[in-house]
Amino acid sequence: MTGPAPEIIATPTPRYGPARLYRDAASLATSSVVNAGLGAVFWAIAGFMIAPERLGVMTAVLAVITSASIIVATGVGDTYTSLMPSAGALRPQLIARGQRAFLAMASVGGAVASILAVTLLDETRGSLAVVVLIFAGTFIWGAYTLQISTLAGMGKANWLPLASSAASGAKLLVLPVVFLSIGWHAVELATLVPALLVVIVVNRLLRRSLQHGSPPISTPGQSEELARDFNRIVKQATASIALTLGLLTAAPFLVTVFAGPAEGALFALALSIVQTLDFLGAAMGVSLVVHAAGEPGQARTMAKSILLRALALSATGGIVLSFLAPFIIGTLNEAYRDMNVALTVVTLCVGSVIRTAYMVWAALQRAARRFTPILILNGICCVVSLCSIPLLTAHLGAAGGALAVLIGQIVLTTGAVVHWVRTREASR
Image 1: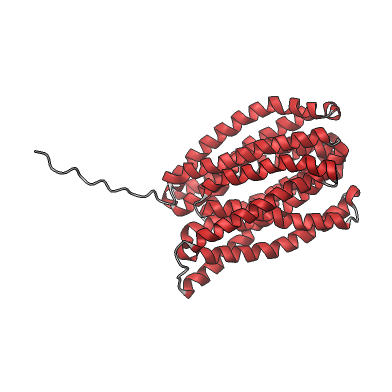
Image 2: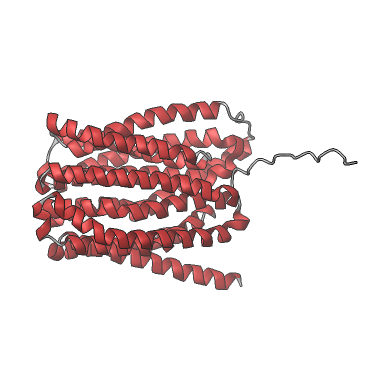
């Protein structure tokens, strides 16, 4: 005679750690791939409809918007992903503090970006309308970017594929309508309008999620410690992003300034396609930051696993894009066939693959709240890139811009490897 079957008690999956690392990484990567794939279609349509000289101006303005907004939003977002796993009941307070910081920095960043665009770029010099477009666009695209880190930090990365699909898919519909109706800066408007709608919808869902969570009960000491950590990390993270990702997203603007709108258009098209590889590595890096911050004892194991997967994906993708992208860009407009399309694409692909190791290393540093090594490396990279871009683009155009980006990625990854080796020897 057998006894009663043992009761099976379901154990909930921990919010942070290896059990959810790959699920969140997959959600973030899927979101990035969808966004990049639809983005490539968007740029293909833009390249087909708009002449290189006009498209170069639009991509330069959009680069200024995305650069300013990413610096602001990613600085706050990296702070979220570093602090949110351990914030507990202080999470609403953390988000509120981050929103205030975002609004303040976006105001300054939008103003600076607007002034630079209408001062340095001949085609937009003195345009008040462009000033308004860039200033408003910094807030819109910044809020859209910040939501990615907010969702990841709250353990809701599974929302991202749907949100990215909605924003990127809507761009494909809005672009022809805006271009055929008003024509004025159609690329920028087609990017910002869908992003604004997604921000409004997701923001309402986030508010409901916070209201149904645990009440924000905390002691004054905990609140003060959170405020100190937030202020320290957001300053370091914002400076770090400005020196690397901010510079990278501003590269189409710089290429346009130093090499002309046609070369700027080619560089923007190539970068938009190749950045699919960067998005994959960055997505896995965000997931690693969140889960390594939640389970620091397993951080190195998770980092090695993420690194192997990210390298395999970026190398495979780089080979495929090196063959396909030059053909795709060349078919959009005959003017591109007489330019260094293949050299530009291949150089950018190599840089993205090399950057993968740096992104994993940087994710580990952010999870441990060590931003000083990242800041030092990014400062060196920024100086090297800013010195390289004017010289190389003047001689090689878009290909020179790609080479400057590659040099910067080599500097970052070399520094990351040296730091990792020294840290490992010191720990032994």
